[in-house]
Length: 126
Image (cartoon, one colour):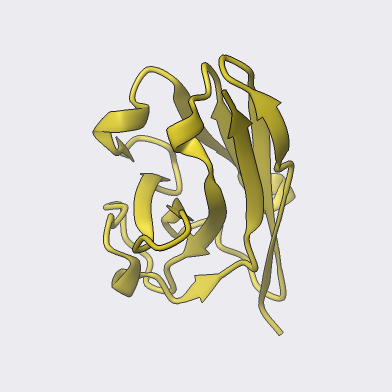
């Protein structure tokens, strides 16, 4: 059974940092794109960041550029999201996702991902 398990969320003050982790099990995604999405209450799921298996192709939503960094450790089957200079508008449930198709182009649309974690809550207080 394929599982993606996120961790690292929590409550942080404005300007603080958090590092999210997403560990996969049940199959390897070492050659697959991985991404992070978020969903705030009453809003649609939003793309945050994604990267190719070799980290050569990386994408971010404009609102997090310069503050968030996505990375991966294929040997550990884990993808990370380092979040710095957090703002209240970053508050959301954060999900990691994996695409089943092997491609060097990380998608930004949630419909292009096949596996999802259960999410981890990030709350940024003002």
